[in-house]
Amino acid sequence: MSTRGIFVPVVAPTGSGKDTLIAYAKSLYPDIVLSISCTTRAPREGEVHGVDYYFLSREEFENRISSGDLLEWAEYGGNYYGTPRSEIEQAIAEGKLIMGDIEVQGVRLIRERLPEEAFSTIYIDAGSWEVLSARALARAPMSEEELLKRKSRYEDEASYKAEATYVVHNPDGHLEVAKEEMKQVVERLLARISS
Image (cartoon, rainbow, N blue to C red; front, side):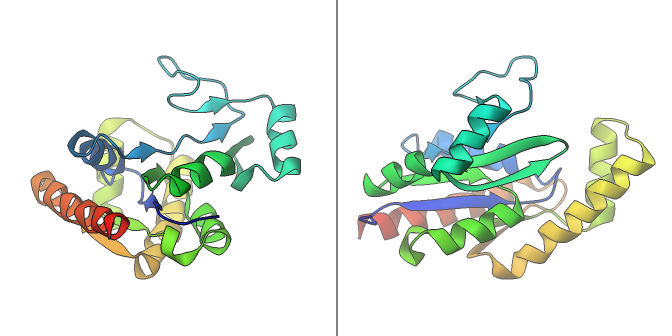
């Protein structure tokens, strides 16, 4: 595979502003390709097949696993989630910057499967568990069990910070600072592609 583009998974705990920052980068640079994951979960209200996710049956998803058409996949909450290989490889070959919201274990698998020059990561550092859990609880109430699950995921995601190529800081109440950092990171990545 010719490697001119770069796939950039964005790793961050829930409540870190990850979706906002990815959307901001896309608004500044419309040529960024957003990675669309496959899932077996049912669409939520307002979600569109091929825009938010590729919604697949378990059989369709398992066929993609068997055929090797997923860079990574995992089962979470009784549903499969995965990253389509062909779309990522095509965008890389076309010299595109591809961004996606990928779980930590998936990012580690993808790093092993793509050429080093075609892969970078961004970690969104939005502070401590205490800050993020307060943010999450302010958005929606959740059970103690759900909170403990999220804390475990937070610890896993926070451990990735040291492995990330770039870190964008999004401390509570300073979204403009995070947007500026995200813009600078994307500009560096685009410069790598065009050089």
